[in-house]
Amino acid sequence: MFRAFMAMFNRDLLLAYRHRSELINPLLFFVIIISLFPLALGPESRVLSTIASGVVWVSALLAALLSLDTVFRSDFHDGALEQIVLSPQPLTLLVFAKVLAHWCVTGVPLILVSPLLASMLHIKEEALGTLMLTLLLGTPVLSLVGSVGVALTVGLRRGGMLLSILVLPLYIPVLIFAAGAVNDAALGLDVSAQLAFLGSMLVLSITLTPLAIAAALRVSLN
Amino acid sequence: MTTISLPEFRPVPEVILTARDLFMSRDDRPLFENLSFTLNPGRVQQIEGPNGSGKTTLLRIMCGLILADEGDIEFNGQNIRSVRLEFQEQLAYLGHLHGIKEELTVIENLTFMQKLFSNQDSEHDLLALLETVGLAGFEYSPARTLSAGQRRRLGIARVLLSDAAIWVMDEPYTAMDRKGIKMVEALISAHCQRGGIALLTSHQSMDLSHLSETPVLLGGQ
Image 1 (cartoon, rainbow over the protein chains, first blue to last red):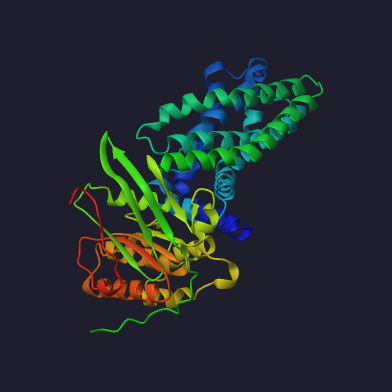
Image 2: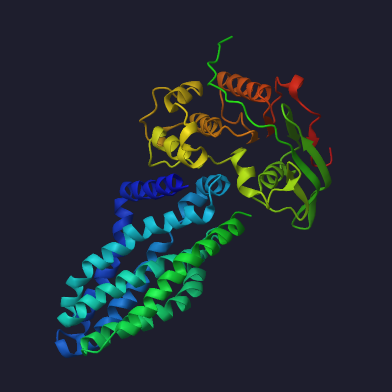
């Protein structure tokens, strides 16, 4: 069972590596959106640092949404999804491997590049750690919850708009707690409550969304 | 006639697949109703009917990919939805699409499928398998360079490595050359001799009559 999980995970990483140009899109989008704000609002640190956490998190949300489309689409169109669904392995495990691989190539780069963008937005140094931690806890939730929406809409011809309408409302709790944590950290307040909320959202989505994704994929293939 | 080197065929368990009172409609037009048949070990069951008569739909229902409007599919007497993993362990489905990733090489595709469809102690020699299906020499070619017939052959290699008792094949001869058709026939007949089941649709007449049940006719024939 673990062997199939690893095979799925490795295959998706390899496929992502062979499609490097597509891979870079969400990251580029994230960087460009954030770097537009200092240009539009002027470089005063006071204005930027008050909106910085919101800007980073809204951009992360949109970048996640942009990248999600690729999770199941090619597998759906070339029949690989059929074979995955018909394989004698638990589908929940295989879809979890797929989403994990997807997060590794789309979510992790956002976390890595965030210190650079934080300094561009004058985020205080003491809030930087919190920002990265919220991204580490929050972006997997975005990938997992978003994948449920993708699994539901993968069979539709114009699923893109529907996907945003389905998924963005579900992202709001993550946005509220993550941006709030970064703001509080900048003010020197305790952020453990928000981080605990983000952590519990992550645990919940790791345990529950693979079941929903598997069920939604079966519906989409029907 | 050219001889085909057959792979080492492992024995498969004897299983029975039953379709019970299937009813399926599309756009308010019934495709089939009260359709029942049983697939027994060692037999080939063909589905015949004109284009659009629901052959592919029926095969997908038999695999559990689509839910019929009414009726059940039973695997050894149990509904396939309640014994999904055991059923899928004995199922190999060759559809119109092969699930081949174009960015991967032939051998990478097959290695992944092997890990998905068989367990560690029943691994096949993939190079021998590729030779059987006539893809020797293409191991390291990217799958996107393969022709339609070669993709079909790769799909058949995937069927072979699963050691499944039930083969469900949708038009297995499409895009195949004459030698390829002979190969598929030889494989199906060897599969039946080891007690396997083959369920297939085809527009071409086949040389498997001695193993075949009366075809299931769809589309009001």
